[in-house]
Image 1 (cartoon, rainbow, N blue to C red):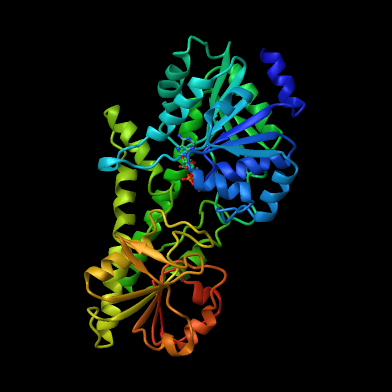
Image 2: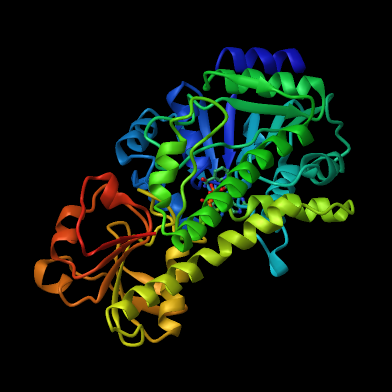
Length: 435
Ligand SMILES: NC(=O)c1ccc[n+]([C@@H]2O[C@H](COP(=O)([O-])OP(=O)(O)OC[C@H]3O[C@@H](n4cnc5c(N)ncnc54)[C@H](O)[C@@H]3O)[C@@H](O)[C@H]2O)c1
């Protein structure tokens, strides 16, 4: 059975099932299909399945053209029916892992997905979890569910974890050229998962266990959250000292070793950086261990939207303007550059804080033709000469490539740039204030 599965994978005859077709699952499914595998995508969201069937991508990193191509070649099929699992050789689970009540890990999506796998599992299949989660999930949660069928891991089926490292919006690093970490429950599982990913990804790195692979991902994201918090803290200090944080970071990064660039901003967003380290701190607490760096970094980053609003209040006060009833235009509401994703976006937090202070808030983001905040719909503001003049301040919360910053700078009364995109683009002016 083991040898037969290895051969099927080597010959690209293995059928691959991707469970959860979101930011992670859809690009992965397309990559497998492009490389010559027959792929079946399974998702509980009927709208998403219908869109895919029409050849319409809802993920900015996947073009309609790419999607239509693999559909036309009949390499990629999609369904909401989990019985499709019976026909596949490899199942890759890419479902969400958000925070639940009290900001604790919510692994209910993983449990549901793996229960669906259990109900349809066949001997000789390999199952890989890609959703980011705390160390031990694959062994402690997935393994018992799957073995409750009477089948044995390493003999009847294979199980492993491989963290997704996708960076939405990154034009250079995609699924194929981002090295892939793999850790199996058994050695055979690590080997099989490695064979599978080697067919689509340039470099595969096996580690000793599924838990080690889970920990690698959390180390990476914890590293980011801590360094972002550090530079955010230094940025707030620089304001007090009358120094320009952007000048400092630009100069520091000229050191050829021992320093890595991180930049301040209005806070951290997305499904990963603000969320994943909390999975680790939760697990740590269950072992009586306190993750002080994570807790501190989370708290510093969470203060950033408050800091930005406080600074904006001062900037306006210096111009004899109160924040109450001030007209503020937020540029960019996505959590990061060039993505259509609002999850945990600090821009949304800033809008809410400003609304609490009774400011008149508008927004502009080419990725969002409308916005719903706490049940209230917002329509984007027009960016033209006349309209820009109406705003007391324009606050750049997220930089997107397709925004005309020169125009903004020219016709806005005042701009508070939390991303330093104007200076980096060579746009300067007395009306521009940087974070
Ligand atoms: N988005 C990123 O940049 C990124 C990067 C690295 C890792 N990750 C991790 O990858 C995982 C998936 O994230 P995402 O951003 O792709 O999420 P997403 O919300 O974009 O997509 C998840 C998909 O899973 C589907 N789904 C939910 N429950 C399901 C079930 N039981 N069966 C089948 N489908 C189901 C949803 O309908 C949705 O389409 C998360 O653990 C996340 O932390 C995300």
